[in-house]
Length: 354
Image 1 (cartoon, helix red, strand yellow):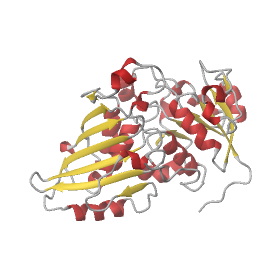
Image 2: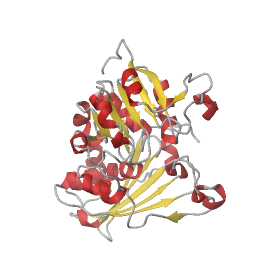
Image 3: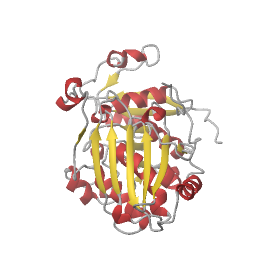
């Protein structure tokens, strides 16, 4: 286990007033190796942070400041960019040039091919050299690369839940990639803090609905990592749903097994071995299927497995907190690795239940 540095690491957050930002503030304020020195925002600039989030009175003594990259670079060794898509790529190059390490929570640095990014997210990218430095921030698959990275493209919430469920199947050649179907459900916090009609209580409560069918932006992100795992192009069928709860994602993955004789016990053994060095992934025992409540407020991913001998398919169920392992706490996990700290430092492991 690595030691906590005598001098704390100075850290800043750009986009501190959103849901992802406030998770980061909470985690980094309590992180034993971090000195939180800067909170940046646009519409919230000038406000005391506890005016925005009064539950942090007595815990956070910082104002939200205008976004000034020179000021940020002068104060921070590490910068978290918790911003909407399309903003980070105008900031990261200068911050890196000034010597900062950067963790981007948007989609801007998740893609190997910027043409793919532009096809799904738009924008006019000219930062190819910067993007080439980025490492995909899923520690369970790219731990060694993250340790030496200066720029991390932190995964989306749906891809995190789905890829952790898929990875052993594809890496070990257990499933036919072309048969992958992902049915995922997320709480309303995944839509962010900006007011949207579909997220109103009167609209979302007592209802369940699919959205982004056949065109959700997380599809190419999932496909990119699946293709990396198989070394061949993989297309997946991904359908997300909005469910009337605040936090959590349950991703249910279906695939046809290459060997229909594989049973649940075989897969549990394989998954257990695959994740034996991954402290944040829990492979559940026979017949136990994950619930989002178990992951609430933690950095954990719970995986449940089942096989159907009638159809020759495997069913993998993956549960995470979309704001934590799907966003902020996973970014802190990456921060720990890139700064040579223990991977689990400062991260919550057990939820409050019920």
